Amino acid sequence: MSSRNTAYVFEPGAHTRLPVSQDEADGKELLFPVNNIYCVGQNYAAHAREIGTDPKRATPVFFRKPSDSLLPACDAHGASCQVDLAYPPQTTELHHEVELVVALKDGGRNIPRAHAVSCIFGYGVGLDMTRRDLQTAARKAGMPWDMAKGFDNAAPCSALAPVSHCGHPERGVIELTVNREPRQKADLSDLIWSVPEIITFLSRFATLRPGDLIFTGTPEGVSPVYRGDRLEGRINGVGEIAVVIV
Ligand code: MN
Image (tube, rainbow, N blue to C red; front, side, top):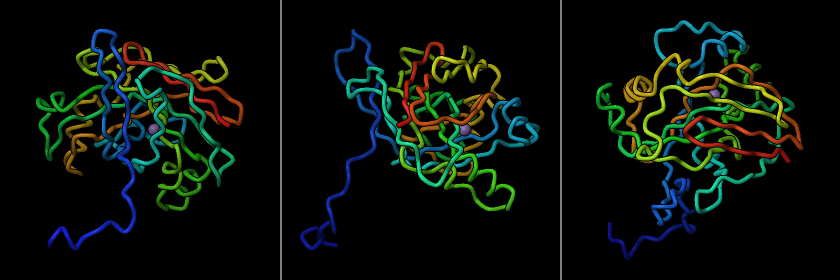
């Protein structure tokens, strides 16, 4: 097809991007172009039990959020800052889920475990915001629960810490407070499936690509939030995130 006969119906939107956290020594500002957002369900046993499911299973549970649900919770230079999240429609039970986010710089299909870590660019702190009432009703009815997980600003995420700065965190505190009250607190070593295992399993279902983000699951303590609440998440050695519900 000749390019002189093609035109966009409307101007394509800007690619979804996430800033890379800055190290004073680096100087340059790096942006990570986001492709797909994958999520792992029930990856901490105590959280699986609190939502009424059995944590013992043979393979991880995966789902996706639309990439335009990403809410970068940092400034354009990668410095953490507080961002507003508008309370979404069609719910009266919006829940927080603080999660370690993995950012891929490489992908593929059927990625062997030994190769998985070499696909990782860096890590962030994300919030898998969930319309829990919709999810619970859909699960009871045996219906899909995409609309419980995919909505505007459903995926706030901190700036990304590159592996060159944070390594591959396998242990360390992951926590979330609401209005400074502790709600979620666990250790990354509590993950049922490790990050390399997640990449290996997921690459059997989908071709992973550079730019993909993987939200790796939340520990126990999920709870509803309301307008005016300030959520602060932190993962030791990775970063922090601050979101206000408006
Ligand atoms: Mn989650």
